[in-house]
Image (cartoon, rainbow, N blue to C red; front, side):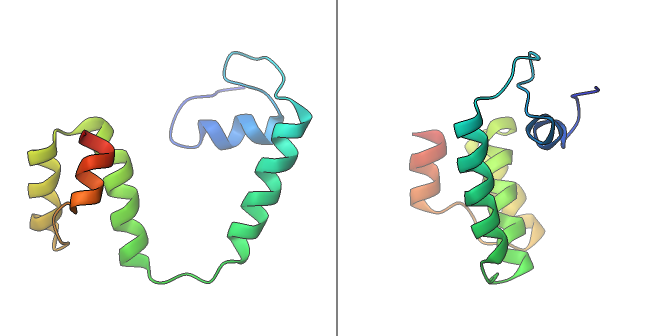
Length: 90
């Protein structure tokens, strides 16, 4: 099984294995699936807000604070919020 790319984690979870090939504990899988089922039922507030949240969460792993902040603003979103800076860069 190819476990690379942006959906590698989802593929591994669906197969019930970790990226190293070891089995995921049944209790972890049950809780994860329950929470994801509940999340799937949650009403969404908007695509742009969800996109921004994903960009911040993932972008903080790849860009320094000033770069991510500038890129957010250039794309038309508000810059990083204080709580995001504290969480991702603090």
